[in-house]
Length: 195
Image (cartoon, rainbow, N blue to C red; front, side, top):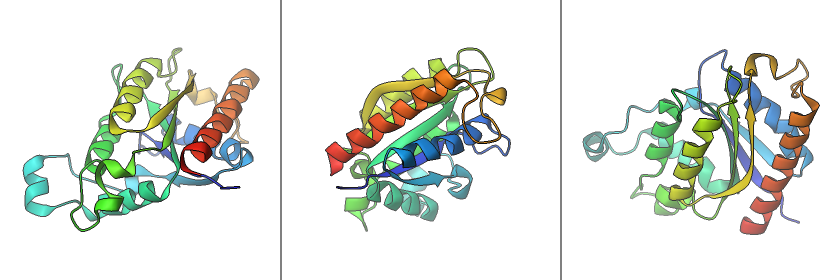
């Protein structure tokens, strides 16, 4: 049976980000569901703000080429998104936009080909009660436009500062059960789409 490869990306690179902590908490449920998991730290892929003239003059940043290759080798994506003013973070949007650009030297592992036919799942985080729910609608739309198959299951984790325990699990048993089910659904969908 095919072992799906799932990338986990937090939409924040801030050192003490709740989304990054929650992203680490998603690794064990995905592995338990049968996936090979790779946590992507966006701080390791520092791309300039996307600008068409910059792309025309300089091509794709080397860090984006590396990230495109990882996306192309994956079967699915789990995005943990914080909410900035009711929407997606600029860092996450910029990264998704850069990765959507074609690389003439590697067309099979760049552009929309890195997204097409792959499964995706969403988890939101916020210090507020809604858990980044408003941002998840925007992220879902963007990922769908890029060609990812976003599963219907999602999780919004409010009061994120207290939501993840020292063991990396969610402190709310109901939310942890939802995350476990989401991980299983993502792995199953990724296996069926790409296996």
